[in-house]
Length: 302
Image (cartoon, rainbow, N blue to C red; front, side, top):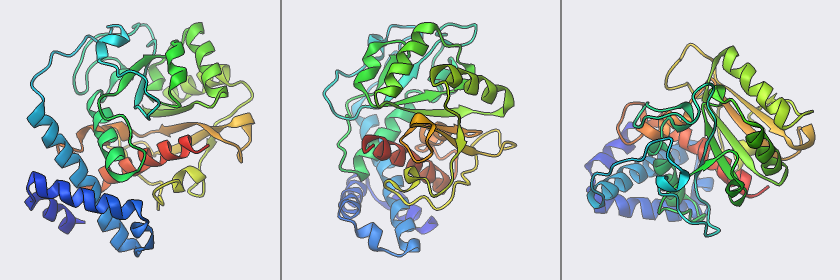
C-alpha cells in the first residue's frame, strides 16, 4: 500500500496520468478481477490515488479563483450542468430544521445538506470517470431541491446530513414519486440515536410500510463493481460511533431493489472531500470511493 503511494508521489503529472489510463484499461478489461487479492488491492490503491492527484492538479492548473454562490441561491446559480442523459452527480438541497436552506460556504461550513460540497462531489466524479466505462458528466455536478421535479431526471441522488432535515410536504410528495419510479438515494454523514430517529420518521412518511434493515456483506450492492471485503470502514470523525449500513428495499422485500442506502454513523463524503489533501489515511479514502462507485453501478443496473 505504502509502496503504491510512493510510486505515485514520484511520478510527474503526465506520467501519473499515463499510469491511470493504463490501469483503468486493465480494470475495464477484467484484469483486476483475475489478480490475487493482494495484487488487486495494491493496483486499486495506485489507481484511485493517482486519479485524484492527477485530476486535482489538472483542475488547479486550468481554473482560477471563483466566487462561490450563497447556499441559499437558486439552483441555477450553482453552475448546474444541463441534462444530457449521462450520469451526473446530484446533491439534494433540502429544508433544514429551523434554518430553511441556510447560508455559508466552504469546507465544513454551511447547512448540513451542503457539507463537503463541492469538493467531495467533484473528486468522486473524477474517480468514477477514471475507473469505469460509465463516462459520467465531468463538466460539473448538480444541486437540486428535494421538491423539484428536475430530480426525476437523475436516477441517483446524494443526501448529506439527513438528520437535520425538516421535510416540507412538497419534498415528501416529490420523493415518494422519485423513489417509486426507480430513484435511488444515498444518505450520508449522520450519527447518533437522535438523528437516526429523525431519519427513520421521515422515511416512515415517504415510504410507509417499509423499514430499514441492516445490510450484510452479501448484499448485491457490495459486489456490484468492487468486491467489498469488509463493512468495517471507520468513520473519519466522531469515531465513538460504530458505523452501520442500512437500506430500504422496494415493497419492503429484502430480495427486492434497494431504494435507499444509509451510511449511518459514518461520513464517506468527508473521505472524498479530503482525499486530495491527505488528511485521512489513503487506504481508508480508497475504501470510501469503492463504496460510492458500487452504489452508482448498482443503482444504474437495477
